[in-house]
Length: 361
Ligand code: BGC
Ligand code: ZN
Ligand code: ZN
Image (cartoon, rainbow, N blue to C red):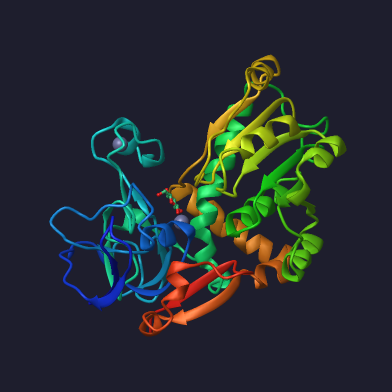
């Protein structure tokens, strides 16, 4: 079947016919894929964790997919729209056996299109019902956002779990008085900001440039603040202290030096983006401050089925709450057959891109 394949650690990709031995499970026709930063890192030969499934000399790319059930059975009806979960357990550790490979103890988990398991950029897949999440009809055109959003649903759940160490709500029991700062305004930065906003937080989005017209529209509709950090973070730190900071830019590790001073006492710092360069370079004073002010720093990654389901629900509610914002998520589509001709989309992110979809006819 036609697939988009890569051969990590080599860079590049090909659209070609390949044989994949995978015939038990439900047959799902792939309708579309989303492209994310991880795909681009693999295509550019930069992702160390990328690996081919055992017994194959290629890896089908893609971990964001929306598909259609091909036959009745296993609790599904032919024609239903579903999204496959992308990370699978190692089969050895307790967390994986209990359906939480996002906390795999051995590190031997598999990730579709990333690590040891064929991805979803192909005509169809066979999968087990437990890994298929139903897509509400209402959000069919933006449902692809549910995969990245599932990572963030899980991340926020984790932040709340960490912050249960203290009383972290407002007097009225909400999060309406809490300040959050999100570093980065790519797809992840925007989705994380919207998620926090929908839970009540006052959110400031940061990037080191001025906001685009498109971004301004989103910020206005969803009630997000924006801060241009091209001249540093000092001014932001003087404006307010943050209860939560999310690193979603994946830029230089040195950014930690800028983020820590923004935090209030008992704040949490969630690291989501994969830092691409640099060293954190924290002074002993900065680390003393982390201790003295009980700041929690936590790594955030990968959502599982409950988080995909929550992501679907949030997308449905955002569609009504923030129609223009939701309507602007998909910034480009490209036919799978065209992918070779448009090689660029898999190598580089275009300015202004939120999500580019690959469509399978
Ligand atoms: C995916 C996550 C995955 C991570 C690490 C991200 O692009 O959305 O689900 O765990 O990459 O491979
Ligand atoms: Zn991704
Ligand atoms: Zn495991």
